[in-house]
Image (tube, rainbow, N blue to C red; front, side, top):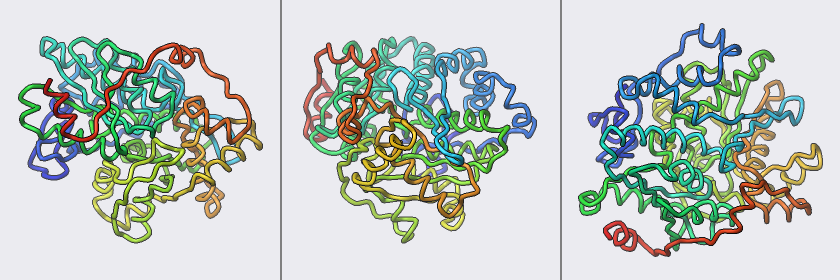
Length: 431
């Protein structure tokens, strides 16, 4: 499999180079030169397949020639060692829980897969030191920190916006130490992301450090997220329902990966991008104009992204055809007031405690099903509610049980370095 830059298709490379470099030399995102279509026999027997066996078959075309099958099997086993339950909520609504991993967030899968791949490639290069540079709006930082903690030859530098992530999220990326460093940025997520992209193109930095990214711009972080959709279909196949997914969307990597799963053959009827008031994509589908605005802080902070990097990949999947895209994708925006009301409604109706992002996904699904009641929808619950204690507890007037793995974070001191702009980041990386 070859990968090419979405800015200039003549720039191509292999999986290993794309993973190590993060983005193309022209700052474009890498995209596979083909999306393999799985044979009908794969889906005929998907219910009886072991999840690990299934995942190896799915990922093999994307890493073929770069990672031997036995190594890929080990990577998959280390990546998918927890469950992805589907919780029934109503007759035609279910919750796909993606937060059962070590950092209680859906990004554990992509972060672990990438960490294992990079660890393998780095071993081939005699453990040359690599710096993983990543921007986070919330959960990416903790998942990446956990996935790469202690990996030989790799340092992790995480940029996060000051005061715009939850206390638990901040603790997950500032209390690990070892090879993990957190940089607290005086700005918003888009500022962090822009700094990361600038660093990749800075020749002075690259002459001193080998950089790669662990954001969903990196194919090894992005592509494994399609496994959620295969796993969900595997669980629901017997029910023979017309399946739609509502995805809480910020940088749009997760929903984009779902679209790759659809292209590979998963019978997904429709996608719903559920956003907070950072609504660049809903506005685009309404007006055909892509006009990012300044980012607005919300209680669903992991989605506080005004210019989602992965939307260019979504446009490529649908051949930059607006009509084709709008036939496969709906998008809705919701306010914090609506999100809090949804958290309360879900709890009152079912006893289920949703986090703010899952609540936005629920609202998007409900809105879509109003006109499509014959379909069955899953909304993605992307993080454990404990990661947003203040919001959830104040919305429900209850105490959320705190898992032991989170309690231990409160016994550790936060360690972070404050920076204001790219000049500060560059100075740090050159020290």
